[in-house]
Image 1 (tube, rainbow, N blue to C red):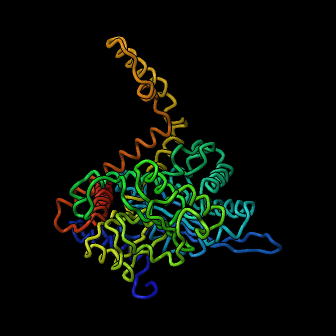
Image 2: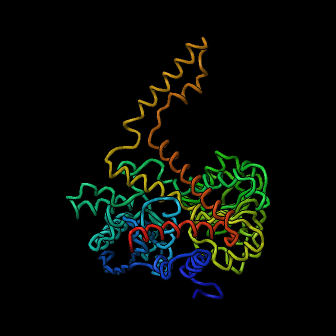
Image 3: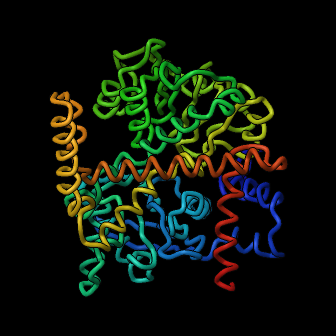
Length: 471
């Protein structure tokens, strides 16, 4: 059990799972089978540098193989441990099932602070870790496909892909062994920002449902809403950027490790992000007022609170003081089981991580498909769509005797390229998943909230797969 009265991340995930299963009619033992982590591989390997040797410890957990390959990120963090990896792998299983991505759930981690090493050292460490995982089948386009997570990004994925390709030169699909790669190395346009974009699309879908808005105590549109974001990493930055620039929300506070930055008129997200990259913190940024006790800002009054940093941020200790009307979980597991119960009791509407964090794996799926097809999305049909648009414009102009406005002509004659298709697919996925969750929530009295509904949907799909397989 975790420190104090709170449970560990893994225990919290399992408790939320159990709460959902209690509302379902599953065959005896099937619920326990779905919950159980299939296997965990721990590896220790030495690397010689800086006039000595350092032994690194890493893990790769496979929660479920009801679909293959298993899918999930690799994080680099000094606090990484096996239980955390198992919890994240479980969430990946449920997340993929929820949004109809045909992957099992997996997750990996290396216990390391990447800031302590230069690029050359990180490359050596990453390649060695990739070798160890590949030897045991934990990196493979058909068995297990990693992706970026906390502390890793496209650079690390390129190193892993190249390492796998060297070890398996006869695998024609080698490039599909990881996702989240640079676009120039087989990646896909839109993957870097996909999780943040998914948060935006998820919030948009929530605001399209007046009944849900009423339950949360909100009304109107997304535009103008006051939002607090915790964590300006990849997910938090892109979610805040898109919501601010495209939906006209006000990001009134950003919470980071060294405190929080406040501006009730709305923060300039780009200015804050650049300052954070240059200095490593928010202190000294002229875009807003800096407050040292950043965690307390989670409790400030706002329309939407977006925890986009770490797990276990809203707990039994502070959940009773949360004054947001909606908590939109952009991170994995930011609200504990006890914290979740308190939020629900206080009438705070939670959009769960199981759904809202699924943008990354959805676009990873598109990248994996692209790699297996060995062709860029949109390459064949782009010009055909553009020509059809030109013909439509020509027909309208000839029939009406007038010229179409240039901005409309440009939109209609634009053939969908890769990023257009990625965004369209992600938007459709988030819309469908939200309404599937919502239907369960509204139709079953024993399902008390969207989180439980999301688990019910995901577990039901995994159970159906296993039963149809005869397992």
